[in-house]
Every structure is written in structure tokens, then in C-alpha cells.
Image 1 (cartoon, rainbow, N blue to C red):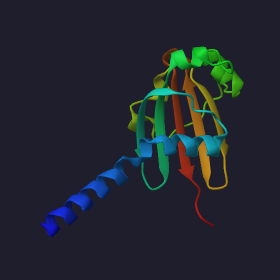
Image 2 (image 1 turned 30 degrees about the vertical axis):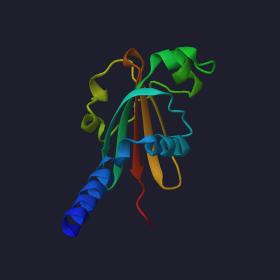
Image 3 (image 1 turned 135 degrees about the vertical axis):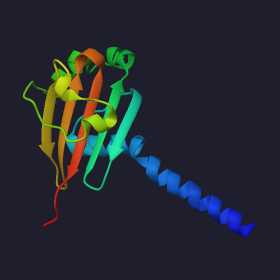
Image 4 (image 1 turned 90 degrees about the vertical axis):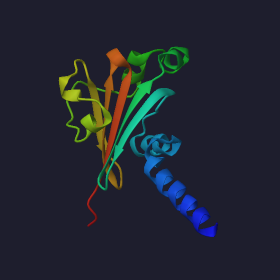
Length: 138
């Protein structure tokens, strides 16, 4: 009986550690790193390895429309100064998105103490893609 309990605990903990990258803390860490607001989302798809974390968020258009700050997706990307200057993503296809084939994508990029980051908004589909790349330790 004890062995079965320990096996169950190990299985639950290992599956939780593999699922953690799409939770609310993922959104919070992106917001702190980039200074961007991730508004209410309807769907999230994530990829993470030892160097990159890439996440595609489907933004809730109804929530954006009700927002006094943004009003709509155009208000969102204008508020955060996204531009058409293209930024290369490494793992966008790992989250089911190929930004290189999409029209009217708007971008931002920057860096924090420990990461380089890239952001893209696809207004036609209310999609926000964020990617963080860990800096090499010096």
C-alpha cells in the first residue's frame, strides 16, 4: 500500500512539473520581464526548453472592448508601441504559430536582467506571442 501511494505522489508531481509553463505565473513572469500587460485570454499554448519559453495567447476580444485602457486590439498594440519592424522568433512554430507566414504582424523586443524577449501581436486573430530567451551566464 505504501509503495502505491509513493508511486502516485511521484506521478502527480512529475506531471505537474511538465504542465507548469502555461499557468498564471507564466503570464505574471512575462509581464514583469517585458512591461507588457497580458489581458484576459481565452486560450494558451506553451513551449519551454532549457533556453527558451514561448507562449501563444488568444486574447479575449470582449474583455479588450470593455477595457477603458485599450478599447480593442488596435488600442492594445498602440498603447504598448508595437511596430512593423520584424523580430525573429525561434520557437513560434512549437506553439502552433508561424509568424513568418502571417500578414500585418506587429512586434516589440527588449531585454531584462536575465532574458532577451520578443513579442508579436497578430491583430486579425487577436493573438499575442511572447518568447523569452535566457541569457548566457557570464
